[in-house]
Image (cartoon, rainbow, N blue to C red; front, side, top):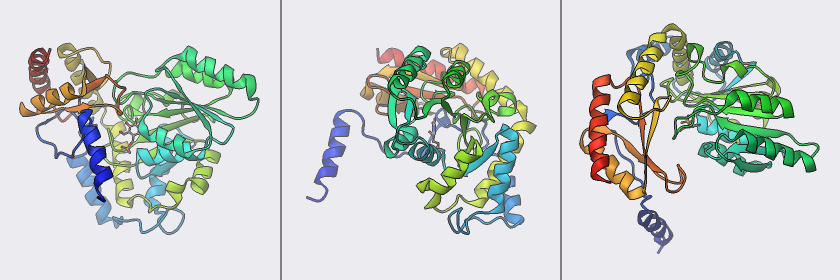
Length: 371
Ligand SMILES: Cc1ncc(COP(=O)(O)O)c(C=O)c1O
């Protein structure tokens, strides 16, 4: 009786081909976001060991506003501000937490958030908890952003407008038109929020991301997550000081939560150092991306979506790939729009050219057999 509603949920998901379960990874990595193969690297293991030896604690012991604020957090934030050329940086326990905190806290009642139709779930979570009006804009459609801004301004003379995008879309691997959006934000006096989760460490000079040119501006907020190319966890929010100060005072997930592990902050400091010191990681990744593009399809990034459409077929194809030893996962709605279930293939330094070629061959065979 008690379980009846939950069993009904699971049955509904199953009937739609949307039931998920946890799986320990097996096979060659074509699904992680560990783009630079830093997560299991000797370099970051050594960084962690050295930090432990110099006495960095594993746990923070409290909220950042109480005793949990450790010099390691502050050192990371100062180094990240210098590296990303940001006026101020705040370290969060995860990218999800950061996006949730920003959108629940900064856009005020009377503001409007215009977000790309493909924006990440964490920004939706923040907007749902926030007080501002929100409006979806068709993917990468500059004219639609401008029309929505003008429309809002015809009735609302005050209230800030926020544009929210990902610089590199997590499930499609395509880019936001950042220069055009930034020009629009400047022309209409909007805030511009750029989630760099999948670009940080991979693109831009020293891996500073696709939005590096816009860093440090008062109206621009940039999020660099640390759990993907940086191989660790957490997220670095770069923004103007008053915005960071309001988050420290108002963001419930930041205030009423144990601060991230100081050890983790020490590891992220190591990740940032290696981005600048080892450009060869990025160069090697770019070469692998070119190889994948020749064997699969053009993508322009390390994220290659192989669209299948039907949920069950996507799951069956992913399982067939896994049975051949390739760790490829099916991504289904609501993570991606209805009717666009896909295999999300990611290219990382955990694999080499020969493995990409073999995977592409098997994928073609399997795709043919499912036509
Ligand atoms: C675009 C984007 N933003 C934010 C996040 C959340 O980051 P984290 O994994 O650090 O919570 C993700 C993770 O999948 C993401 O893809």
